[in-house]
Image (cartoon, rainbow, N blue to C red; front, side, top):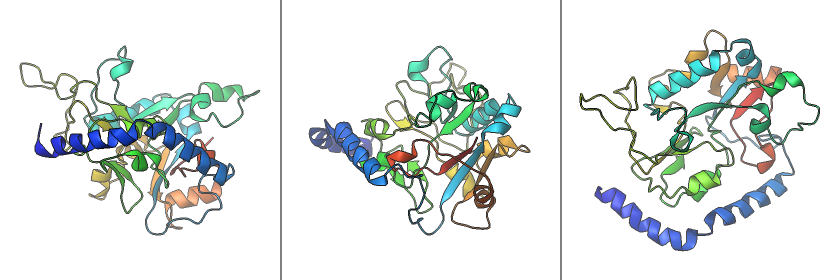
Length: 275
């Protein structure tokens, strides 16, 4: 254990004294904000933040038309970020940055009564919402979870002490905890749980939380997120600056009706869905 990790574990001990009821306190806070939002529409009528504000538009119908598209997105993301595969039967240890949900699980706020039957089995791509108002950032006692100037909610794995307050705070279940060491190697030196390791991205250690990072490392090189590239040429996922009126993502949002996950919570997700 390095010094920085030991230092933050010490801090966690202090935080735990006040943080035993942190998830409950957070939930109360969240409910208060939800009440204040009055069931608004996510970004809705609120004044938008200035500067860059990255976000995604997911076209659900494109995924319905191409049954393999969702898995291509998942493979691209997980290969790019060395997300380990512990086996389909090991859900407890599963690490996921991007995954599919049913419509009912993804959008519980929307009425399921006499729902269009075609929606029932649609694969809804879900990942971190990179909220304008991220509860996970407030819940993290070590600042391992933070929001950068471009609106991305990121993780500093070296600061994470594994308290999992962020997981309790996230209303979208967008975070995974490493119960096992994902970087275990076989006798021949290959990774046991990472089939095609990406040497340009770090592996993680047991005891840390991880999630989608909006491909911040690819954006720094002028590339699009891996899931966006995997969707080409279907444009199943469109990415860009929500505050740039000339961006493709802004154009789509002006022309298409979209919904967001749990908008009444007031977290202001940056992922929009064309249904």
